[in-house]
Length: 271
Ligand SMILES: [Zn+2]
Image 1 (tube, rainbow, N blue to C red):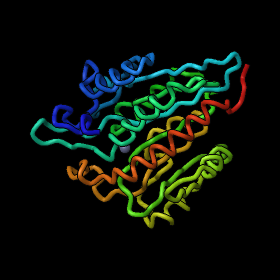
Image 2 (image 1 turned 180 degrees about the horizontal axis):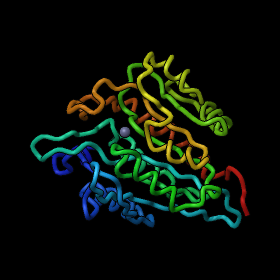
Image 3 (image 1 turned 90 degrees about the horizontal axis):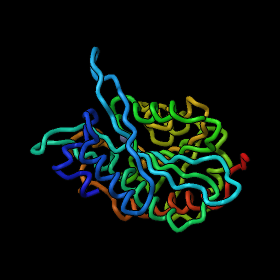
Image 4 (image 1 turned 90 degrees about the vertical axis):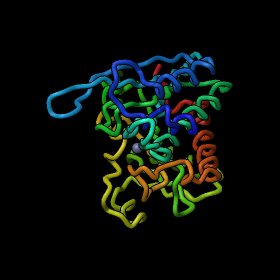
């Protein structure tokens, strides 16, 4: 998180001919774990008449069993609002937290015997309109995917609660997650309305607010994990000093344990 929010990353703005310093960093971190990693570049609309290039970082941890279940894709957007070396949007909570969590999850998954392909996808141009995730889903067969787990904003929390928004078909999985022992409470719902009530804020359309929406539109079940409203969201005050690292670590450990358990036992065999 320190690296991703540092001045040399200049706020991780999407739109460059080559993968930017943040994309290169994530790529090299996956690679150094020995994970097959590639960039996936795509065009996105930037402004009324122009387009720009975005670059997802895609890491694949393949199934190592003879019978493999459907794939799981874990997403976190690494892009943020940009800036200059002197003054930039650090985007610590949004979404260096999710990106760093992806790297931790990669490490946890490495020694695990996997019954399904696990794709760890650091998306670009989420802030511009979920373009990285929207592009990724055009390159896959949705029926080969059992689940998207999306991580966005994991370290600012007024209550001791992790929020999970999921579609109805992920109900059993979220119940499995809730059965784990957590040192915090988990509020899980498939209803935006209930989330609005719980957070006492109706402003955000949580279903559409982050990358899971792109998967949802392709009928891929999803679970979105986040810590709720952040008053410093999209301001220059979204910096490391405002993160609750102790809680962040607990949350990432819980989510990571969950993904490890899903990797071990396939959700549903397809062949
Ligand atoms: Zn975000």
